Picture 1: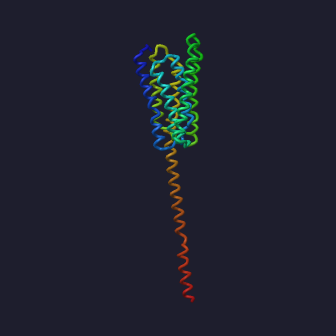
Picture 2: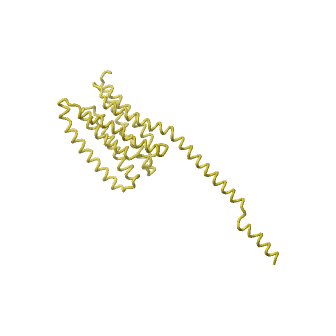
Picture 3: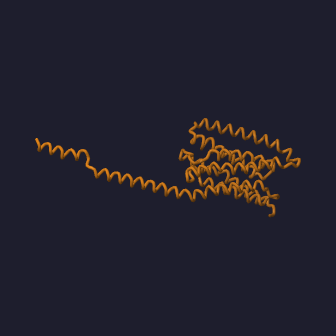
Length: 261
């Protein structure tokens, strides 16, 4: 496909916007319910670090500005979801101050790691050795894929998709799709970046499909359970009413004793 810088940046910008707001539905859901049951803390933590490693790749490779912003925004919001808004504050019941301190610590460590790796990898890349920078791109792809495995385990445990916002998954998928499309208009197609974005789309889609299949089944199962409990309570009440109460038994005995006397 012919290179088109305007299309590349436009599509990359749309992808960046999607990945800027993607976690807001998840943060809102967790704040509203005050619960993160069913949301894997490893998902958002590893996604945060995958943003750091892919940022090293994007900067050294000199991708377009929206695609450089993407991993930074993605990582920052993932860390917020992990430390301040979701798993640590609500899930583990830590105080807001402790959650903020953990967020600040992981952000500082990630920033230091990213800057250090950029300065470490750039000289080799400029001299023609692309393997170090490719490692960071591939490692980011692996992290994104591996991070969803604990979420799949949560889905398996609950037999439905709970705790994670489906809107979050859908917007995340759109971010990956538009970012993938932006690469098609780049002068040289970036395979590693494309694999990373495509993995996001495919593995998010698995969560959405699980929600479409498992959640209605879980709702029917809970409905049957409530109906069964209602029937059991009704049967118990009927059995109870078929036996005479102690008061009813006492009345004939009292009348008989009065006649005898």
